[in-house]
Image 1 (cartoon, rainbow over the protein chains, first blue to last red):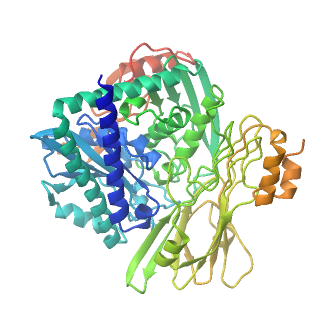
Image 2 (cartoon, each protein chain N blue to C red):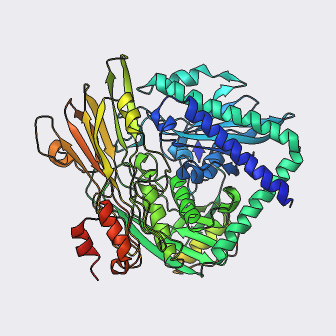
Image 3 (tube, chains in turn red, cyan):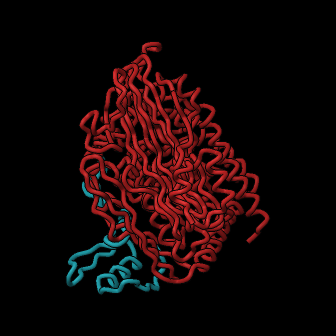
Length: 561
Length: 66
């Protein structure tokens, strides 16, 4: 094992993945790409192993190994030629959810396939029953938009026009989708050209062997981390509020078996799959376990398939953690993922309390909307992500106003939001008292008020934690739950979506029409606290009150000694 | 996974009865005395599930992960 070459190549591939991401950010049309950065770029071996991934979206990084593996089961290597680009988004073929589109581009050197460059991106509009791709009242996969099995969207350097036409005919915003898809293709093609140069520089055999060494190294590093956790079976249960079409809470159960330097994550005991769209695909179940383990282990371990080898995941079919066709699943990747990862972290926190954080807000809020833009005479659609409070850790407060742990996405700036869409942001602030009390305080959620301006907007939301709060650890208190409120233009009264529109759920509702002057307020959940609140440093508590993070009343009530 | 004869569509999604992964090949079929016919993706899954069905809460399997 040549550590010098391995280290250089690892960092070179990582830089290349970041460069692919910059291409997406700079050339895409939709705000979910160029502002939120809801994408990930990676490199895979011809066998489907992930060799490198940039640190964009953790849900997609953890989902890459199964995605690549499933895609290559259907498109044999013998059918892949230089200049091809494959597209895939099918949640039932290793995918994460319908909006997540994955592109693969082969890297050929001297006629030999040596790798793939890969981009996964969240496409904001995919057709289906609501604009913006989050139909929270869906009851089957067909409500969630177009499914694309692994097919070539470019062949030998030329567009496959039939695939483009078929795809773009099934979405509401074809011009934006076209631009975003071109950006993704530019990313993988740039990566392919750059990686071919790198392989030529080192030689094919050195490249292949160094990649093998790199994965072996990552495996050894991860084994050492797991071996440091005492052997045993650690279990944890968390819940989701409901599925949007019924009132039942949904159980997420994780049993972590630490056996020497190996870890088995078993989700047996989780709820059977539900009618509404919060089921997770197998890719999500894998990704959530990987995400949790990466949160608990040394962040310098190279993120490749090697570091996942010591981890085995058991996700019983037909459950909310491994949904069977044709149930809906779009919220599984955003809402179930953080709950699954949180259950794994909660379980392992019993064995490694100093590495774990308490429960986090665990939702992306998923406020999606669309309508007709009279200025440009075309349809617009937006997928807007909001941020939550993260859980506190043994040595630090939770992060405030941060995207849930599977997203790592940015919030769209208010100025961009108001320029692109017919909303006025009347308030955007950290939410006082939303962080769970503790020796270390949970991170704060946010509060935001939008006012609809000069167009009718069709909006939907798929979120969670309106009922089940983020858990505290070691005596810490739970974070505050979230809520979404609606105020009609001619009214002073704020109502939930259940009260205003007779929806089944306050957190999951579809196709509500906002008229000019109507307002929506989104309160996002806070993170759980860590340790007994009475043990909080009085100077830190005083600073919290002074900063407006904790009210004087809550300070007296929750932190009494 | 069972594809149509021409490969155009999927007729049945076949998953491992232990870990839930999609099975594209023949898998490892097993007939369990109480659980009936089962299909596994790997020897590890077959052994883990056998011990679970025998009531062992924390199985120990010597096979490598699939």
